[in-house]
Length: 191
Image 1: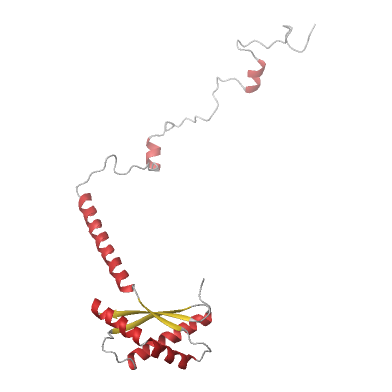
Image 2: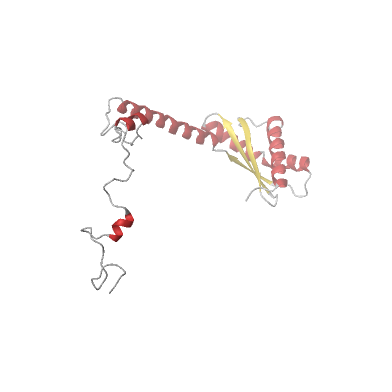
């Protein structure tokens, strides 16, 4: 379900307040270089999850997580003082997995690049199993004129002079004699 506009505005305001307060008022020596990446607020505006990243190694991340846990009360009171809502949301700090995900994607891209290079090397000396272009290509007009059987000028669609007319073919039998009726009489003049 998408965030309500009020929850999104409150989350943006909490992100600004927490980032500024961490920078100016939290003096814990365990705190490393912290960046607040996102804040998500529940629909009832009672709980805010703050996502952050830390520049440094695992020791800096652990120290920063401990410093933020100890400063959560002070940060929540500062958020409540500045946003002016009836109930101040609880704050939960979660280390954002964005850098780890970015490193994983970067590693996958390097693997894909190596596979593409291997494929390109294997294609260099390869030959086609059949024809180079297996698809049929329509013949050109010049090819049609060269292979036209009617190039001598005769029209193959014209009726043959020796062929009987359709009306004559109905009236005449196979031997050319007029057709007879069922009684063997010839024509409509019956005797």
